[in-house]
Image (cartoon, rainbow, N blue to C red; front, side):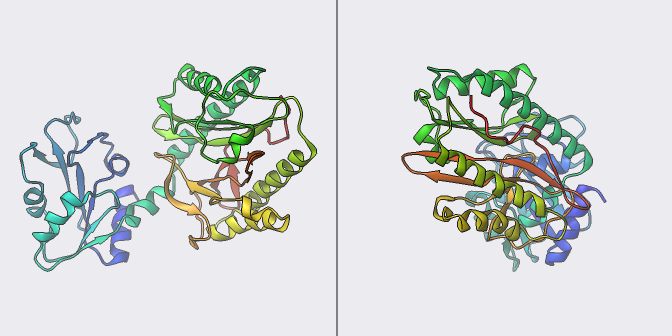
Amino acid sequence: MNRVDRVIEKLNERGLSQLLVTDPRSIFYLTGVSVEPGERFFALLVKTDGDMTLFANRLFALPRDVGIETVWLSDTDIVSDAVSGRIDAASDLGADKTTAARFLIPIQEKMAGGRTVLASDCVDWVRAVKDGDELEKMREASRINDTVMGETAAYIRAGATEKEIADYLVSRYAHYGCEGVSFEPIVSFGANAADPHHMPDGTVIGEGDCAVIDIGCRKNGYCSDMTRTFFFGKAEPEYSAVYGLVREANERAEAIVRPGVRLCDIDAAARDHIAAAGYGEYFTHRLGHFIGLEVHEYGDVSAAFERPVEPGMCFSIEPGIYLPGKLGVRIEDLVTVTERGCEVLNGFSKDLRVL
């Protein structure tokens, strides 16, 4: 079953006959057409009878043979008129989470009895299950991430600043032919690491500091993401104990990943272990997120998602402990669900390492 057929299957399950997709990554996923539309309207209308229509501004450079009926728009055309001429106005219209209100509300006003309903899940859960080609691209991106992590760890030295290390690792991605980073790298030394999303600045690494390195690249359109925590010069006994606890939480969660296990239970495997050791209040974020064409795709490894995992799903496992004024420790891998368990995409060691 191809990708569009899988989306149609989800629409039928929801009792919907039509879906307006405006997420550029989802349109690329379904059609192979890549556009960054900015503020302009770019959408794919999918109907359960198999009919599809692409709406594109004349300023977009599309392949000559898209293979899909295309409605061309100018900046002065009324989007709601163009869309209402192609939808069934008497039936409910599914819309995805990125559809801007300035387009969606006028479309709704032109409908004759049908409603607009949020139906992102009809694409999101299809995208969540990667095929073999997607997984191989993600493996390649993760192999590059492993290499860059090793090179970055070796580059950290006395007098180095967070910003200097971040600039270096970005240059290494360019060296390996990546399209760029999948997110702005997080490099945080010492007490800065107690902020999970600290952005690198001029802080200089000091003796005994932790160094949290959270990085990812984009290769062949697919993202990688990995975090490792190092120590510079020495690791204090308390810090070593925290590191060991986070590593255990990471590995306990990975050990239970298999088809049928709920996302919330994977989160609990790590969270309960950290809480039992008295650090529960210092694990301040979800255990993981889905990843693929975007670094954060729909789906959380958290208490909020009770969905059982399926083969082909790919997500992060990234427990952390953050002690204000002292340090942060996070260890993150990407995993993909297999028929009997999971494959960890990152090969970089999780042993405690003093630089």
